[in-house]
Image (cartoon, rainbow, N blue to C red; front, side, top):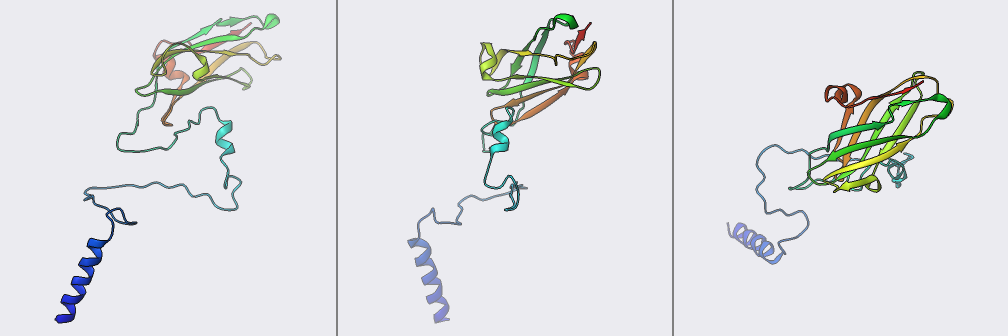
Length: 191
């Protein structure tokens, strides 16, 4: 019994002497269900010790995957979209001007409009902070110029998808059908 009291006294004195921020200690009472996500890169992976792949993707925000008690978990929204001109002559191809009205509760990072031609070839327009023509990163108008491939065939270029990303990495992908339902243009006709 005497040794038990001595051991308890020793443990209590050590607990009182150690700092409150010691490694592995927590003062919170955690109640409920929790989930922790981790990314592990294997040493033989080509991505190991490098994030060069993300730097090449303009839709990867610097804060992707960041989380916290007040973290932003809402993806941006598309409030409007325009294509000018919607009809081009194959003999005198010129760039297509795209305008997007993008909204986010924190800040839009980037957006991408991906079109597919009659034979399946692709054309992409990217909207970034440099594309902001009016408003703010929370509610602004963005412009981008897209050039269709020079040897394009006549026919319709259809918007396949419109991807929106905010600064926290929240992403929303709208399909061409989604924009049609909203009454927004989704086609460029080459004659």
